[in-house]
Length: 286
Image (tube, rainbow, N blue to C red; front, side, top):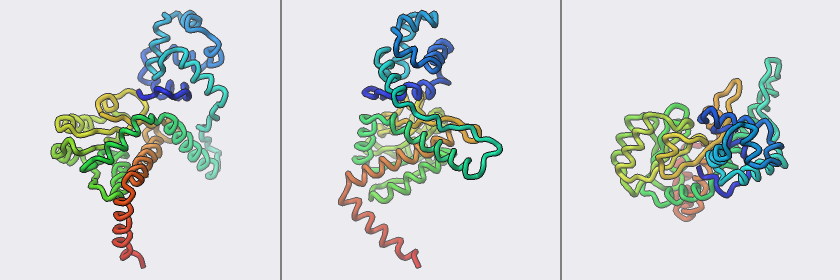
């Protein structure tokens, strides 16, 4: 899952995976979320006894959410309790003013960004930057709301001077992917990681040995398992906004971070490309 080396956000990991847990795993998850202080002062055998499960079951749960073992999970949880993150996903009330609603939306976005930033795996992100930097051609694929993120990525990466495009139509995606080679790179954007069309495109890309990067939700999914380089976002659902919609700002921020890294990596080429672009669009200004 790409968590090694991180020592925080145990609760975030549990919440992000919760819908994919078995009933026994949910039992352990509920216990940790409800009694975090007790966990950090308990041995694994005590937790197992309280839940009437085997020690090995608790250990496997810790591995399931990305820790090396129970002790690593306890350290993470203790760090989270020392510097607790304020719950800023306040429920929107009917009598909230327009400004109060706006503030809650902003706070929700801030939390999404903070949690996604904390989950950013340095090794995977470095690999993504390197793959994009050496690519002959970069293509961004997404459908629905993720299609707009793909277009935003294309809009940004045009400034690098690299050959890039974006497709939100599934037929265009699969046709284009069939023409790519091992010198190319595609970025697949899907919150759920279960989009059938993107998974079909991925199969075509794999046959051509195309390097594949995914920007997807922090949970095991067919997409995250099959791509070469998974990059994860973290978001929570609120009363008026789905988890997928909340993730858009994190997806856009990952794209921004990749773009800035490529601009730094290709300093001279990027500078020349930007100058050409600014000269070209200057005719649009009055």
